[in-house]
Length: 380
Image 1 (cartoon, one colour):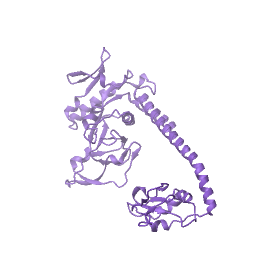
Image 2: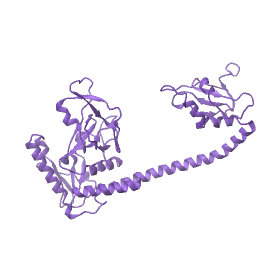
Image 3: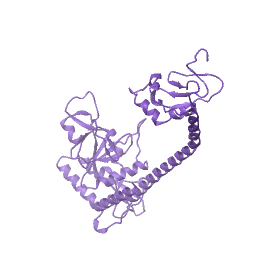
Image 4: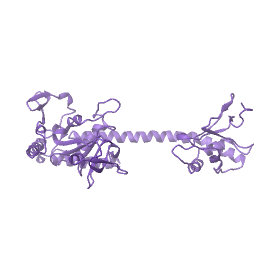
């Protein structure tokens, strides 16, 4: 091997460098004795001429940002490939041989402490992140159970809100803006036997197993579809060219802490699709797939069109939408939102419609949100 492939054979003390793909710039010190090893085309060998230097020193240089930055400046293309010409352009600080050895020995002495520190820091970072997530869950759990702020009798009841919603729905049905079937809301109540029941029209069934926890007296369990109008956006169809070209967002633009609106795409929307697929300021948007239930409130002064993988929720009467955003946040963190499907799970319109949420009096909703955000700020 040594005679036939002298330029491709590794010997003990050589430095091997990765030259292509996502591993470029990685290096290792070759310390294997015995059977010769031949380099492949994706690696490159570094070796001092004669006794000019200490290979261990050279190895530590290749691990440095000083070395890698010089390679990075020569990057080109999506899949970078480096070779002899690229490495030959890299400048190296070259101390006297004995000093190279002393530097290498000192680095070797220090490295175990660095690795130990890095490991401890990683554990600390993970611990801080874990504590932060658990505290966030606890805050949200207390909030939606009615334990974060005190109840105030003068603030009314959730039942009064439901009556207002029912009145608004009847009005929309008379105006032809809502189907009559929307009036068949569920009514959820706790019986004298301490079990929970749901009544839809004349049918009543027990739903105790679906109830997550008991609520304060003036609160009410209800379905999302009872208090919010909701629908998906438009399905992207390359064959459909009718309508007005308008910018739209999909789940890749929607995050818990806001929206990414760079390079929005366009698709055609016909007149009868615009109102249904358009989100306006104050609408709660919820992801159907991917990170199921990921939500954010559209707070821009301009409207935006939606693709079909986003649900748009708009309350029938003025509610504190941020309170329900935090409910979705908690349900997502605790994996209470599930989906069905092969490969990709989805949060369908029916599943969204039937999602159970607690409904506090309106003023209490706002007080809860204020306290959540105060505590979250302290966490940050």
